[in-house]
Amino acid sequence: MKRAISLWIGLLAFAMLPLFAQPGGIHGKVIGPEGVPKTSGSVSLSTDDGLTSIYTFPVSPSGDYEGQADPGVYMLLFRMPDTPPDQFIDSVKGVEILSGQNTVQDIDMTRSEFLDTLTPEQRSALENIRARNAVTMHNNEIIRTLNADLRVCVQDLKDAGSAPDEQTRAAKYGEVEALMLKDSQVKPDASILWFQLGQAQVGLMKYAEAESSFMRALDLENRSARPNVQIQSVANAMLGKIHARNGNAAGPDAASVAAPPAPPQRQYDNLAPPPPPPAPAPVVTIGESKAQVAADFGEPQRKAISGPKEIYFYTELKMKVTFINGKVSSIE
Image (tube, helix red, strand yellow):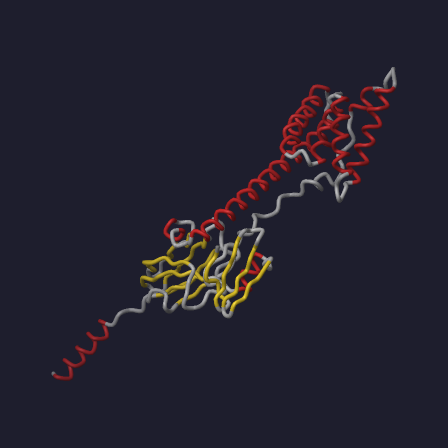
């Protein structure tokens, strides 16, 4: 009987042992205070308010991170590559990871909770960076729009050249003229826009306007550091035909002037396809090293050293960065 009871107790104790829990997944994106993804760093999970990290996951160049961890409630920490192990840039508390499930948790440093921790000097520098980013993104959007319009114009000019009737031909040239009149006002320093406008105006037999457009394109090319020979050659040829027509009382056959040549092959030299979204603008963070600050902003215009204290002066950015023992201690 004793042996049977002991066996029964042993089986009960075995049955009461907890099953091993499956790990859970976690992923998200790290957004810097300037509003763009971080391109490096790491995200860690901690259960002691950041003193130690149990799991650490790298941040990808697109700002994403992912990994697996045992079920539990964690504090999520973000560190830059040079952030000391006992410090962190930002944190999110109360992140729960469930067994066999995927948790989504971003670290968004544009939230007021994080921005409120910045000094007035840091906030001022951040606003300057945001303003520069806004201008860059606006300019990129303009370039994208202009390139889309140019692609339409190239096709319309081809279609006009092979149009079966005068009405279709005039409609195609009219569309090109309307687009280029608009775009040449948006970016008047782009010779390709004036060149395409001139071609459309020749097609519409607006010779005086076409002459002005080709002259504008040539003037811009002559002042360019890298002139487009094809634009120069075709524009000069078209001007020659316009001048010959105006100087001949009888005038040549209208079709010989009205039909512009095919656009040059390198039509996008002055408006190259827009570059990828700008890399996130750098921001100085307390605890960064001198090497990291120099990598983000370049060498300072002036330095001052006093024992363990060193100051970088960026006069163009109106920014002063103070280091103590090689780490950022304040930004003004």
